[in-house]
Image 1 (cartoon, rainbow, N blue to C red):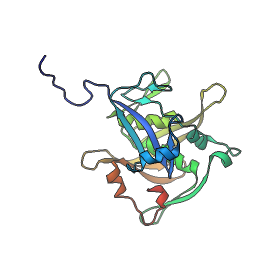
Image 2: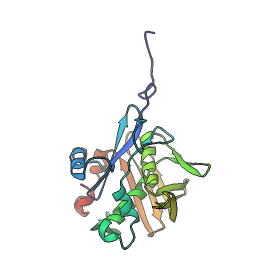
Image 3: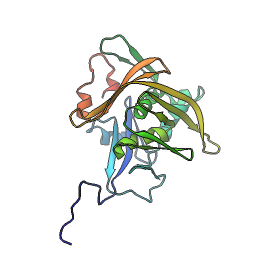
Length: 250
């Protein structure tokens, strides 16, 4: 054999998308068996990224906690602090849920979205991951998985699913996210409530825009929200630094 022709990277190798870190309102969440937040900050700061995905050439099959997903993704991201923040009750709130007092203001100052706590920020972050994508829901034997145009797209939706925000229904007009929490006794998921969204408009990703956006009506709080996801440089240059809290855009 003298020549091997390959159409793209990944044809002859196993490219696996693996969720590594996320940063929500200035708070960094990394894998529980990774380094501390201080060390993670050194890694994240040069990238200025709200969520970072690492593309590895082959999956680490021996990795502890790793779960091989359906479409070229490997899930081993686990952060108990994030889960405690998301699903803490009133008695636990003082220990797990710091106050933040952050307000996002619309361009024309006609609408505001206020975040009182770290839980509010984390909830909105996972709503964004669960809605701003091009994945479709695949349900087989009562197990929900996702198929998308690329493994990185799927990895973000799976991250939200694995932390209790499971997209269970999606079409051109509506989205439904089922929030869940794990029972501490048997490690099984328990349903909490259904979050419903009306899809107003969707702008798909392309190489020119380098981002995708979705405009939804969040029926849980009655607000119309535009979730946008894309390349760091494209998103950063569109942020409003003057009228919004810098903790949300750093």
